[in-house]
Amino acid sequence: MNTTPHEPENGLPARIRTALSSLPKPIRWIAVAIVGSTLVLAGIAMLVLPGPGWLAIFAGVTVLAAEFTWAATLLGRMRSVATRLWIAVRGRIPRRAPGSTEPT
Image 1: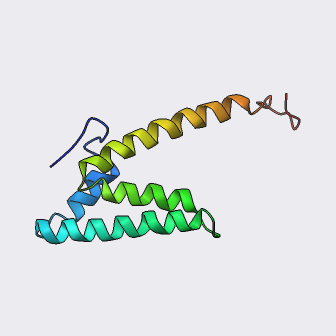
Image 2: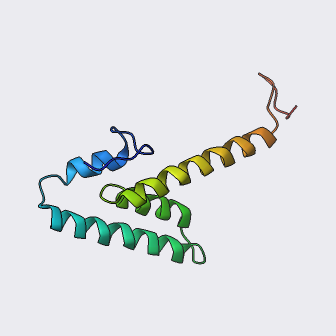
């Protein structure tokens, strides 16, 4: 198994790799490359077309991370940026007091 510091052993890429472990390596490599690339390309198209573009891109990189070290590294970077963005957004949203209907 090719893991990186960004990819936990029980993460989704590891589960995908386990699910495809019965396939011979060349076939598994080609299947992961085709499915992951298709998801990434569809996600890029959905950035300008209706649809969940970023979700498809994240899903495609996650599938690619099952076989490719560069994708696992990219997935780790994407997760850290998304986490920092989420924390920044959550810090700007006003919190409601318990039992209150108006933001405080």
